[in-house]
Length: 222
Image (cartoon, rainbow, N blue to C red; front, side, top):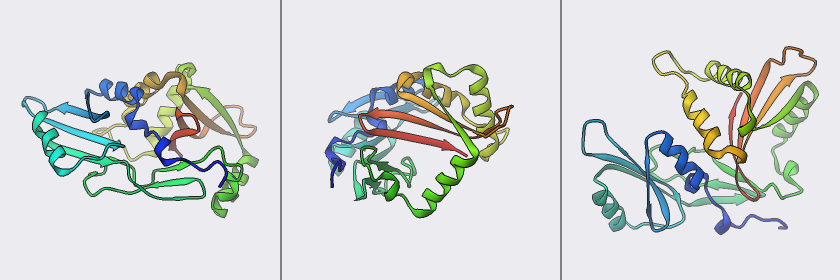
């Protein structure tokens, strides 16, 4: 079909320089193996490490995985190759590896934003919800590098309420802030408000990161 995604051209966000910088802000070190990024972190008080290789185009055999573990003294190494389960109507679905250990979202998919039939390819319920939301909500798009403190505070407050975080395990707000900083101009925040709401109370928000041409990585909080 016209505008069909080319699998070989897809770049996962976890293999970008910006994501490497984000992981560094969280205390992870980036090393390269077969041109793919591996993230490594030292365990506290021990000369041991854990590592993860996420959505790598370069496939590794069992011998190579053992080699990586030995080279970097990894007591745990999670390897998630770039496997596509299926492609349908411009959407790409990931195949979940048994060794992923939950590191990759199970519902990750890619949408072909160049496809004129994007809305037609969505489920009827999704189209209905979009049409219904457009009647009662206003939307605002903000560059991540231009977000103001009061805007960020409202987003983080809504995130804390909508997610099951506790005082013992609070929402990782600093991680979100680091994400904005590392992706800078490639990062956009979508905010939504009830129409005619003068106080502009947030209804929901989302974060979109431009990975490369025609590719977005989305993170939503409703």
